[in-house]
Amino acid sequence: MTIVLDDGMLQAWKPKGVCKDPPSMSVKRVELRIWQSDEHLSLPVYTNTKVAEVKALMEQRFGLDPGVLKFTHKQGSMYRENLDCEEIARHVTVRGIRSFARVRQVYAHPHGIIGAGHIGLKLAMTWLMEKPPYTNFVLFDKRPEVGGTSWWSQANSTSRLQTEVGVYHLEFHEDNGWPADCRVNPWPTRDQLLERFKKTSEEFGILPYCRMNTEVTSLNIIGRDFSTQYYELQLDHQGAKSTANVASVSFFPGNLTIPKRVIYQGEDQYDGDIVYGISDEFDYGRATGVQVAIIGSGAFAVENVRTCVEYKALKVFMICRRKTISMPRVVSWLLNQSLQVISAALAVEAMSPMYDLIGVDQWGYYSVFANESRTNVTIKQKSRFGIGDVYFLSMYFGFCEHIVDDIKRVSRHRLHLVSGRSIEDVPVMLKLLGFNGEFENDRLMKIKELYGWWVNRDLKRYIVAEPLGVDANNFAGTSFSPGAINWAESQVHLLHYPKDFAAVLESGAMPVHVADESIDRPAYVVEARHGSMTGISLGALVPAISERGQTVGPLKHKRMWQMHPLDSFLAAAKKEWDTWSKILQDMGYDREPPEYPYTEEIVKVYLEKEQEAYRQAEEAWLKRTAG
Image 1 (tube, one colour):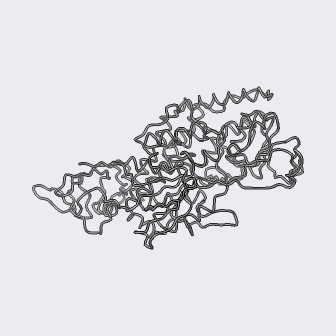
Image 2 (cartoon, rainbow, N blue to C red):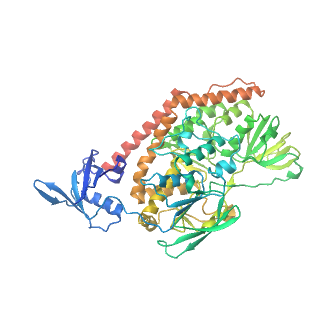
Image 3 (cartoon, rainbow, N blue to C red):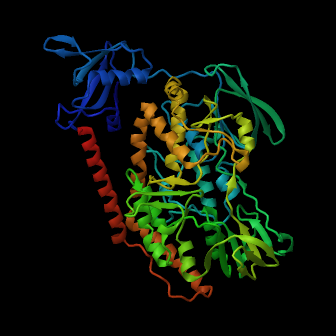
């Protein structure tokens, strides 16, 4: 049997030069054979990779003590032991292990997953895709069907995926396919997505392991030692109480679930609809033909601008204390198709055609921090990007007025702003001020602190909710599936090989978060930087996870170009643009409709700048390694 590792392994080695000579970047493959075994391992290395490096990697991979491994290779008619300081030979015999396959941890109880949303289903799929399938798990969810919090509890019947389905589909994996209608339907509706979650779960055999309509109400830790303890879950299945013992608990509660509540003075006199614009709790038909106030400017607020166009409201006033950046569809596509990352500088620059259309300078937003030449840029805002082109089109036609102000008080169908302005004849107010997490999730998992994604540094209690906001100077994408596969596969690996978690604990390198009741922030709800630092640290500490990232990382680039090549993506975006333009014109906004601001020529300029940034980064890296 031969195991072939892909070229992602190369990141494990550091190329070395001789004296002042630059490091050799030439690659060779080494075949390692276990003594008295038919197992072979094909390993990519640089020409000057040393024996000691390969031994160290194998010792770490297999949890071996230093000095156990011996490497020999044939020299003439004899076998000679390799010295640690020598370059690794092309054909090596390994003594000190019996197999290249790691021995997995055996558990007396099944693993528990709470939450049948994107990540929970992905974790189940990851286990079932193993060969042979790993089936020692059970998934609990309080809802009747799979799909998760965002699509069951927050989206409404008109909601659509804001980012592209190329990086948002449950089957996202290099060995799987993808939705067949992706080119003509890059932004499926809520109902289409829920149906896809169900269908994909059926196809991959996940549903038999799901216990739906079952809420986990409490967790008891049985035992005192991390290595042997397990967990007793109290369950409520439509009023029927029971218990289940599980070896681990991986909890995916969804993102933020409780709308932030703000009560304005005079609401009792408003005599109109005051609602939180999520789910289907509001009949948007009541917005038809009337003026609507949207309070907030985050992703859900942008979504509600589109909904108000769809229901033919008369006009929208979008009121916020500070504008957060809304992202055109093309910029989302640009970030998601990137092979590595797109700088914040290029991302903001690529927004120019859309912001120029509405006469707004996106560089002036509070969340954009840039040097004078705009080469060093960071975007930092509390809300995630609202993605979509309808917001810009609504601003262009005058359907949406975006006002930086705050509400002082309200009276009948009237908003009195802090600035002194009064907006009359507004019978509908949609509050979209963000969401808070649930402290009950902290209590269920008994969280004192969150170490990376692990509760109280316990490997077997794992909780992930998508981090808050934006805080970065480079962006790898705007969507969920690349993160979901990393969160799922990382925990699967560590549960199979818990010795690898020792380095994570001993390093102390993970960010730590505790609850802060003063801002309604449970411990499990973390900001974007916590999430990014956890991912970076985990890859540095666990080589197998880092190596897997070398495959998963480029997958989104491949999928985006397979599913949304530039020409078809622009065609879909233009078709949507023209449709909304016609709707707005038919509503009485008779301004000349604009052409779609992006063309293939414009986008190809951004793609070339992306490649030039990669070339410059590679040159800088070569200079550092040569020095």
